[in-house]
Structures are given as structure tokens and as C-alpha cells.
Image (spheres, rainbow, N blue to C red):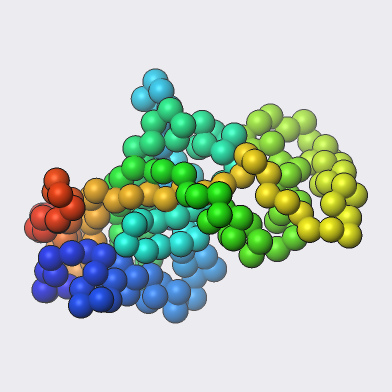
Amino acid sequence: MTDLPPDPLYLESVALVESLLQRARKTSLREPLAMSLATANPSGHPSVRVVLLRGFDASGFVFYTNTHSAKGQDLAANPQVALGFHWDELGEQLRVEGTARPVSPEAADAYWASRPRGSQIGAWASQQSQALVDMQTLAREVEKFEQQFEAREVPRPEHWSGYRVEPRRIEFWHNRADRLHERIVYEQREGGSWSVGRLYP
């Protein structure tokens, strides 16, 4: 990573981030597009969990979830988030800070339609982040919705959708010997251009 292109998302029509994601997909990792998502509640208390990247383009990084979940409630109160990817096989990390905004209903519908039916039923059955007495209770909810949607398509619940994290800061981290890692940071300026620089490891 010796050359520093002026834009982290596009370099001669090839996304620098997308190039990294493509290499990650070729690893043996079970979930190469897993990313840590950090949010904070209205009191400023942070929370982090792993979600799956389900889309990426010049506008940002997309994931889907139950909007009534703990992360959904955090995002409703404070849309400022951080993402973290770590690919040990590649010796690479990617850090992103930005603003999470809801995707369009059309985008959510399109992704919902691509999900396995079992995952669709699960989204109806799970009151994500709420207290659960036992797994039998969840199994009964799954059975209830399987019967409700038997022999027809499973509609997308209103409380299930996606968010696009629009980046304002992106850091590429490359492993090097003696912990002298290479760190390259892009920060968005007003007007949409990016500043680029290096950080000590």
C-alpha cells in the first residue's frame, strides 16, 4: 500500500475498498464479510456486535436488522457508528466511521426476497434483544409463523430493514513485521473530497 490514491472508494473506476473485500471473499473464513458494528445509546454508553456486510458501493456499507433491536434503538437515537473488519489471513483491517441512514423500502424488499425462507420466518419470530424465557418459546413462535405463512411468500415485517453507513473516515491497516504496521487514513472534507495521510502504528 505504498501509493495513496486520492479517493478510498474509487481509483480509476475500481473501488479500493471493494478490492479488499474481494480478497477477503477468497479467504477460508466462514464469514469473510463479518464486521463489528459499534453504536451508542442516548446516554453515550457504547455497544458492539458483529453483523454481516450485505452491500457496498460509493454511498457506503449496508447491513440489515430488526429495527426494534438494541442496535436499532441506538441508531434511532444516535446514527453515528463505527465499523471494524479484521482479516487475519490477509493481515488487513478496515476501520470505518460514519453515519447510518435507513435504506429505501425498495432496497429492503429486494434484499428480503433474497433471504432463505427460514431466515424470513426467524425475523418474524424473534423479538430481537428482548428477554427470552427459553428456546422452546422461540420454537413455538417459529411454528406459529410457519403456519401463518404456509403456502405463500413471507412478507417483510415493517420492523425489519437495512442501514447504509455513509463513511466520513476510513482507515486501511496492513500488518508488517515488528508491529510496524502501515496505517492509511482517509477523512472526508466538506464538499465531498478526501484528505489522505499516514498514522504511526
